[in-house]
Structures are given as structure tokens and as C-alpha cells.
Length: 259
Image 1 (spheres, helix red, strand yellow):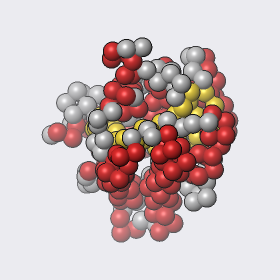
Image 2 (cartoon, one colour; image 1 turned 45 degrees about the vertical axis):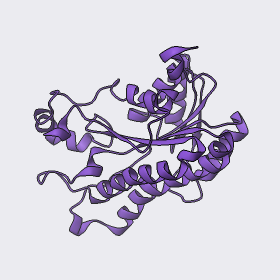
Image 3 (cartoon, rainbow, N blue to C red; image 1 turned 180 degrees about the horizontal axis):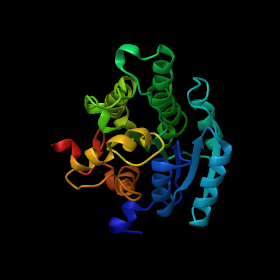
């Protein structure tokens, strides 16, 4: 396949999407699968993964799943090993799994801080490290897409519950993206990040329940993120269309961050 369609084509490639059983992760997995990638999902709950794999299979996507708790430091590397054992390659890593904790900074529990850091920052690094060392560097190419957040650029508005650990880790993801891009560009690996604004999800349910209309009013497009709004950004960063783009963070927030 030639031309732009060829640059976007993912046929024959294998993608890992963490936190892929629902929400934004599943949305991005749909995009990767639609353009030909075999998709491996991870999440903690096998029953939710089974539903997601069935959904993708119905769409014609080659999909499988690995149930794993990425908050455990020993968990990431075996996930990469399992994918290589099954598929023989890993071309695309989407670090999407994440968690948050709402609490005033002065009262934020230490154990909650450690949990958020482990899932949002440590696990993405360990997965990227294992994917690069075991699959992408030997292959001479790879695409890593980290899912950051607009919260990584700023703090919460004063009336909203504080999420200091989430904001801190997403800021870390942003600069980890740049640092890995700088180190691994010579291996043919690009590392980019998508920073979503507010999308309806399990994680944002409590905030949106109280502040949805306020957030919409402060968004130039006048709406929250939808079911299709991350797909184009994901396809760009996962494909050869972005071969000369690395270390970049693409904000997908309907313009909220510009005002």
C-alpha cells in the first residue's frame, strides 16, 4: 500500500494497550485494530477484558488480553515476554493504564501517593524499558505512545478536589516522554504522548458529576471529549505517518487549555 494510506497502515504489527478494557484505552485499541494491528489489552479484571476482546473481535480486530496488576513492580516485564512468546514481536506500546486519588494535598495519604506513582509513572517506564530492550531495539523500530493528561501541565481549579499525585505523575509522564525520545531516537523508536482533557470515564465520574457544566463552559468547543476523539491522534503516533515526530505531547481537550 502506497501513499498516505500506506503510512497509516498497521497491518502485521502488534500493539499493547494497557488499561484497554474500557474507556479511552478501548477507544484507542479500536483505532489500532481498525487499521490492521493485532491488539493485546491489559487490565486487572479478566471479566472486563473478556468483554473488551469480544467487542473488538466483533469489529474484525485480532485481539487478546492479559490480566495483570501493573502496580506491582515485577509485573511489567513478564507482559512483554508473554506478547513476544505469542506474537514474536511488539511494535506499538500504548501506556494508558492509570489511577487517581482525590484529596487535599495536606491530607493526601502516603499509601495513595505510592499507588498512583506505581501505576501512572513507574509501570509505564518499566513497560517502555522492557519493550525497547526486548523488542524494539532489536527490531530497529518501534512506537511508544504515553497517555498523559492536561493535568500534567497544571493544578486543579480551587473548587475541585485536589489530585496532587495524579498531576505530579502526569507531569512526570510528559517529561519521561521527552527524555526517552531523546535517548531512543537513534534506534528508530519514537516516543510521544497524548494529553487528553476531560472525557467521561470511570476516573472522571465524580468530578463530572459536580463540575461538568462548568468544564464545558470553559471549553471552546463546548463539549467534553467523545468516543472518537482520541482515535486520530493515536493512529498518527502509532503509525509511520509520524516517523519524524518524537518527544511531542499532543493535547486533545477541545481547546480548554488555551484559555
